[in-house]
Amino acid sequence: MKKDKIIYWLSTALVTVGMLLSAYQYFNGTYMAEAYKQMGYPDFLRVEIGIAKIIGAIVLLLPVLPSKIKEWAYAGFGILFFSAALTHFLLKDPTERIITPLVFLMLLIVSNIYYSKVSTKNK
Image (cartoon, helix red, strand yellow):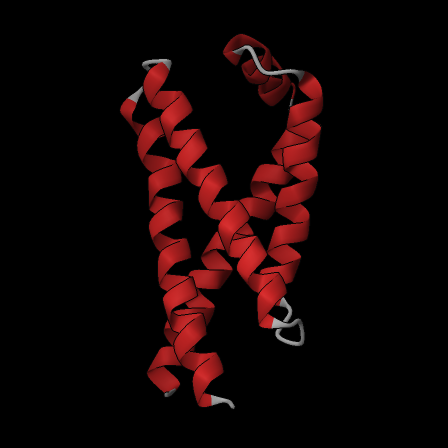
């Protein structure tokens, strides 16, 4: 059980730190605004995704929230990571831009698997 908790918290922490740092860049970096423009996405989408990343990270970190809410955060991040990888692939971006969201997707899957194990054992 201790191993499961360590894997859960480590994978969750990596995802949430990544999302919070990413959200910071979404709001404070002119690079992200320019990147969204080059990809053909409206600027308001960058703001919405930045806000969603912050909310999702908080939801994953707070152990007191119901599992149904956490499931929505997991689903949202899963869609986000897949969409990011697909966008970078279709734009023929460098390989690291395609792989990075897929790495976060794998971490998210690990977090979700171990969240299920840890939450089931706590009942």
